[in-house]
Image 1: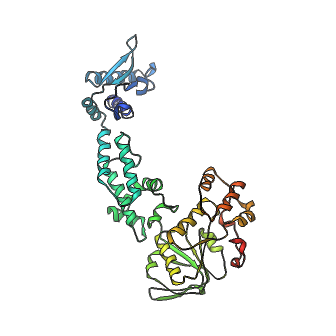
Image 2 (image 1 turned 45 degrees about the horizontal axis):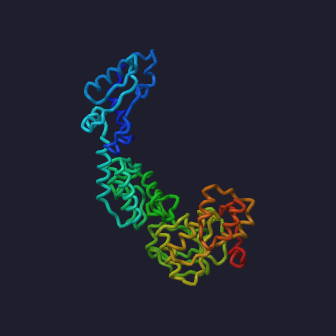
Image 3 (image 1 turned 180 degrees about the vertical axis):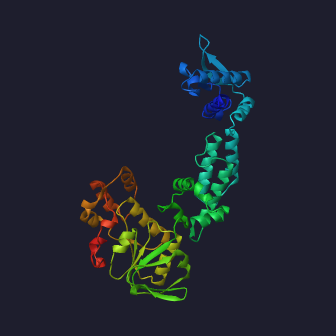
Length: 403
């Protein structure tokens, strides 16, 4: 059996302690030493049945002491108690070589250099850069950027996302960024986390789809009395027995020829979209937060027929309210909430779900004037509704209690 390299292991454990100490951040700090107990090197150090390990560890620390990297602390009987790192930068740099470990100062400085060189015309990316720079200068590793190469890659991805105007698959976007169809997947959890923490826009559940990057092909589903032209083909959606889907790639080619309905209704949930039958209504499934391409379709529809009365039907919870707000503010269309009021909450209360702590906090901070009455009732009853359980009548626009 091959003997363990305890010299390398002791060096690694000492450097880990050093990197998490005040001495690493402030090299002039002298208020405490970097100590490593013998039992931290190996928990069986004092166990007589592990004598071989005991001897190997002692040989390793003796060598490190002779070479001037550490001091050994002994008890009255001369037994080894702990080792202390000698805080000499030249010695510490050599110890990194023994540990076969990248010098953390060099690592952080490499990332810092990349971050200081990078600038963006997007505020949230700059906020991320600035916070990272401050943290690196304090000697703290970045959760998101592990080395300078990763820093360049991740910042490149973030910038490319903000420039992506057309819908594209994740693999094609990865090829676009790196000429490699799978490389982006390695960064995906951190990319999504950065966007969640620094981009304060309302985002879709599938975060990258907010930037038109899709893990699956994109479709828009609609039903109602609308006539469209698509690549020279005239399609009367009203004559189709069921919903009609359009790939988002075809959206730019779509032309509207006629709209016979007088209401435009957007739907948050796909099940509700399929189940819902409303008179005199053009119904579109949004799939949560809309992105720029879905927004362009809504804008095209309203531009063709400005007299349309526009409504949104979503979950009666904090998320549904945020989606409604996002829809109004991004499209600049005067959408009104449909079946998202006190009457609906009271009617379906027994089917509701209990509010979580996060729900309560989000509702308390929601100042949208459309929902203040229902929010008070939701907080009082501690309940929220998923739109799938809400059954809307076909003649809903003749029943004022739903508005």
